[in-house]
Image (cartoon, rainbow, N blue to C red; front, side, top):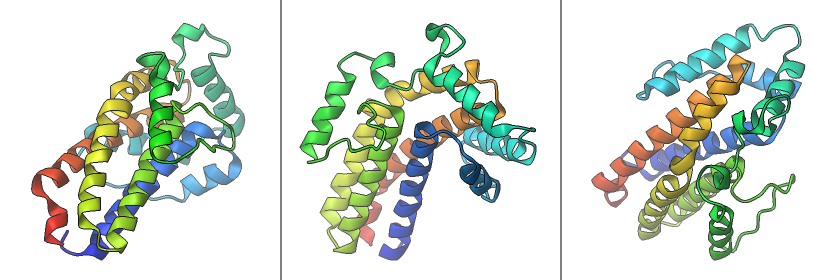
Length: 221
């Protein structure tokens, strides 16, 4: 990347992906979302093999979603994330505190408070819910774009470091185990693919952010 517009577009794409994944973990899949995804074009090639496999799986599912996909996905989502119909111990409960420590939510609340934010999710989800954490990364990407817009390059560098810290200390500290559980108990290819896409994307994000820090790309803009 050798220009600010190119850098902004790159960060904007990252932000969109975080928001997209966050939405999929927060909202029940409806017809509008399913139709929207059916019209999406997923990357043909990815550096991360699991991410590439997830894209191919979701494309295959969207081509043949079955006779009643909305009911199937609703039932599967309730089983996976709420443990309905199975032992709760076998479910993939989407909270960091379940996979790490009971204080994980308090840590997230502290992060929100330091940023002057409130968890204003319409569904009032706890701060350590996977969708809230993904949306927080999207927020950090927005902050980064705002710094770029005014030429605040030190702010961009600080934001990059902040994103890496949050990604490593929070998302990558528990989401790999969560996604493994999703793949174990999911009955639909949709949610199996979503788990692969999520962990593949986060792993690729870590490599991208570390590369940005190492090369100090922003200083050459």
